Length: 421
Image 1 (cartoon, helix red, strand yellow):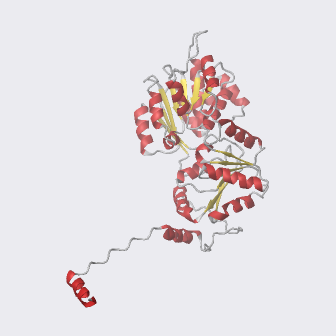
Image 2 (tube, one colour):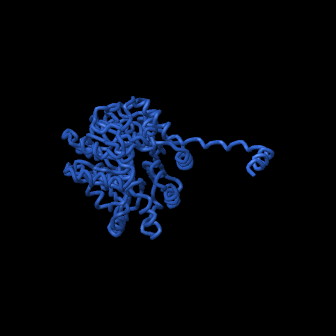
Image 3 (tube, rainbow, N blue to C red):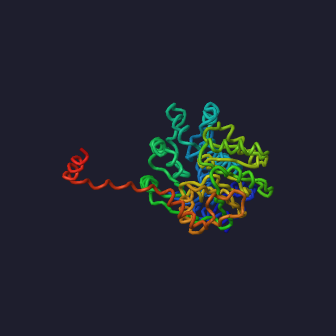
């Protein structure tokens, strides 16, 4: 199948050709016709499946075909809500590329940068707005944005917005839009809150499910190192001496952990930058730009900040800390192995993380091969990984409190008292 088969207009086809898009991905094949037909859509798809184009292309086409009176002020006709700044900016860049041969305008509304610039962009007119909930709520409160003409709403990565506590903001934003509109809803997972939201927002939606979260990309080679917490940094430094690791996205659990890893890598002359919520938007964009261009070899990120990192030729993902949510592991390693390329995912597992490893293996339905020949083996763990997991579980399992001893009869107590006297 080609994009021609999806009834895409010539202006968009020309842009896709310029951007070297050859054939639609499975989610694009299924979603584009439904969105063009004006239907609500629920897409369950993980990262790397091409879902941005799946909703952006038909939105551009539908808005371009609408009759708009000349010389009238542009009104926001489509709103795309995303959880992170990076993802909003990435989507805006993609839409600008896809719509370059149309007259549509789009703008990104995100926190961490000057609001004045965004206000100016809105005043000049925008057909499509891509926004993070926090900054959009600020603009709504200041009456700087008008959403009453929105007729296509996209909620992207809804599960992550739920994790980040944005769902109440999202519900409030929705009340500022017309009740009758087309809604496109995308989520990688389906917790109960998301299922409830889908039922309340979508009307007879078309459901598109691509690459279930339990299956990881076959092209990604996975491995795990059992290593003590104190030696993780040494193991990372040693691993990155291998020059074949052209680019590595390293995941840490915390922001401070990300900064610490960068400091230690810099000490051994490995170029690295961190990207997380405590960084300014300019610093985050600078780090991401340097990583994409190859100036920086290693990007160290937290899970939330990594949403929106879209790099086709990323060779390695390294889990410095294993996530405690198994689905998060799938999203992390999905950052590599994109665009038909192979990828490598390496995980470091300390003793406290072995239960997380077992949960991940249960979700993906396979055992991750253990690398045993390395200079920092976990102390006291020479047994196979499955046995080590059982031992660790026993160590980590809290001891049962001792039952209170059975009280002695009062007669016994008095007898002892008498003897002691």
